[in-house]
Length: 100
Image 1 (cartoon, rainbow, N blue to C red):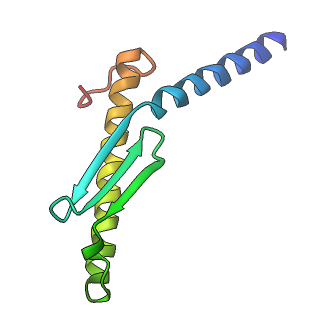
Image 2 (cartoon, one colour; image 1 turned 90 degrees about the vertical axis):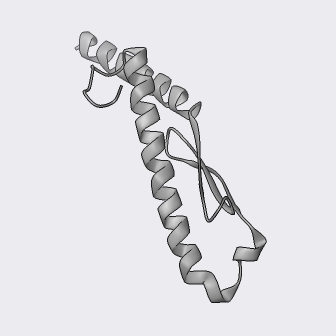
């Protein structure tokens, strides 16, 4: 039983270390000629969203919403790839084909 508790504590410690490492990864994706920028960390938390004021008109609201969704998804995918590569290089993940 004590071995299981120690293993659980070790797993929690590893998970916390992994979250701290992922938080240091920062990606930025741009759209609409750089007028829309989303920054996200490796934990897939949004750090910032910057929207050029000229995009904030009611006549292009639908295209802006689509661009935000697309840019967010690109940032998420980039953050996931970088996180996987970081964990692989740290030895946290086994060698996974296609990530290197």
